[in-house]
Length: 110
Length: 112
Picture 1 (cartoon, each protein chain N blue to C red):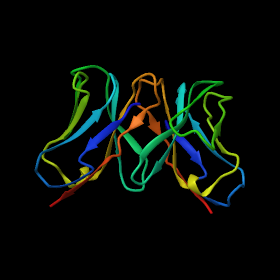
Picture 2: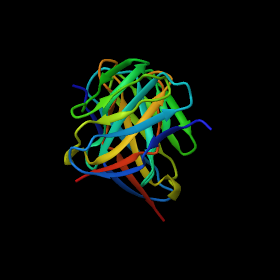
Picture 3: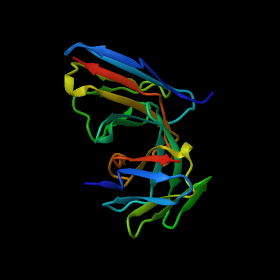
Picture 4: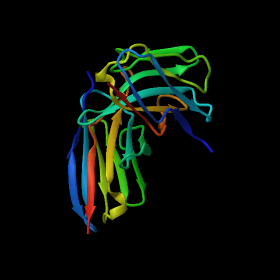
């Protein structure tokens, strides 16, 4: 059974600081997705990572995938208030439905 | 505008009264799916469809039905809703199961 764990589940960080959110998964997969959800809103796709070593960047967010370690990271650089949201990773092992992590609720404070 | 639409957005109903939540996408996507989101449990997939007339169970299919008669529509049917189906429901679509999914705005369902 595919399990996806995100750490931390809650993150309060100061503006301007850097931090990393971790997504670990339990079975072989080379397809991983990151989504953002604002309170009361739907999910918005951030990154699609389809191979080992994949790295994608958009603004202050950078995502990477290490399929050997079964680990993806979402790195936040110089956080700003607008990044406050809940971030989900989701893993597709090919044989099972897409499995989401429980989400990381990020709060960026001045 | 490319989008996934869901109706209704909010629904309060009683136990046992059949209901349908519609989902429609205008992007000619082949893959569509339904999720429910519950506090502390994240998103869990209910059903998905790889193409017209092709559907399969997700992680939590009990108590739900779906159909895919047309490419653009993927309704979620609750034949006999129960209070444990109170949740926030999202429909999503993508070109295939290996592409990013586009999510609808969500349907908040309360079953009393």
